[in-house]
Length: 473
Length: 90
Image (tube, rainbow over all chains, first blue to last red; front, side, top):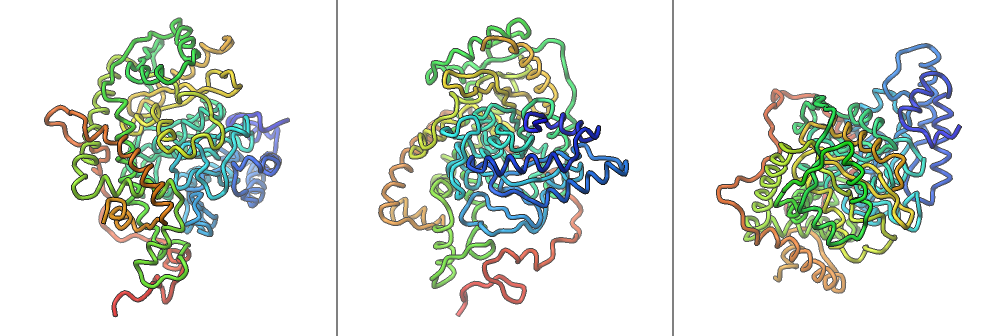
């Protein structure tokens, strides 16, 4: 049996019904990680996962009660702490850092008997949309290694798409889960802000960051997300998301006028329109107006760098891992350590963040962006009075070739146009593969729902999948 | 001090000559892009967004934390339970 073809829930069931041992499952995935090392998706394999698998097998043999993810291998992005394991944010700055404690999300996964089998590649400090800004070397798309895996959580996406793991955890600040999920042909979600604890995850833009799973299928995605969710005393921004079930027999989908205009200006793709036609048999489709939604991207590139510049001030050559040689005083320790340790994109965003926060510019940029954020949130709230979800492509097109956008930061930023509004508004969003383009690579469809409406969002996505299945897309 | 030098100072970063030139160009393009927000006309009386509401704070009581040696374990230099830095005060 090829475990790499199975979903999280299928693997869990195989182990629970003793059709496979946890040890053989873990050994299988470790072998695939080794065989597909060249993808650069998994940057370190945790070989003690095999010992943990044996422990779980013993639990099963003794008939003890099992956790909800018993024996399921999970990989974590390189910005998530797991005590005693290295964590490097794909940055030269943090190489050699060993986690002094475990993040809440990893605690929750371990409590349910999941097995953490490695850490995955990413853009440095989660800044990027291609997983090429990384000290480990670019991550390749498992579906075609000439193409990017997307970013920033590209390693996690490529690992799931390539069958290296059935589930990997990523973080999403402006689309860093949904965009790579779309480019790698798998399911990726960003929950309502506050659903998942950020404790033990290296902060990028704290008011926008959320962690969640990459999986092959919708059912496993929601299953793992629910395990990761919950209020946490260590993160004051967590909320009690009850995953309310406001399900309906027929849903209304909104197509956002402004986003579609942007899409059509830049893409000749016909798949989206063809799919919408098909959906009309199962959904009511309406047009919705969110006048300021396309301003999300510029707001994001003000707010996220502003928060990042503050969050990254802690990397100063004193507290974490790296200090430059030949420094003469404390100031030069800071400046030299940071200049040597951070990569180009991280420096760009720190500088941008300081610009928008600096005297004379703060009101025009930062404060204004916060107002635009409020406006977009209100406009989306209004749109959800008329529809259950907003449907759109996750990205402008398929994965692009490695190196193609690396020297054009602005082109890379535009990758996030459809994903960023969900972070700006704090609402849940989900990307589901739906078609294959002419170059053989997948396209993702994205759904936005109102806050705490994850159950409805997944139910809509399920109906969507059933509707398009068997079609000649 | 020009704009880029001022930002280097605020950011505790320094760029070499060639790097600075390239950066300056890219940065101007990015600024043009975010200028969209600065020049946007907004309705009057719009408040800033406050997505984070810290309405439930725990009691302000000391709680166990990670041991000092664990917290210092990743420091590049340490001595007597402290981070070691170059001399700050003469």
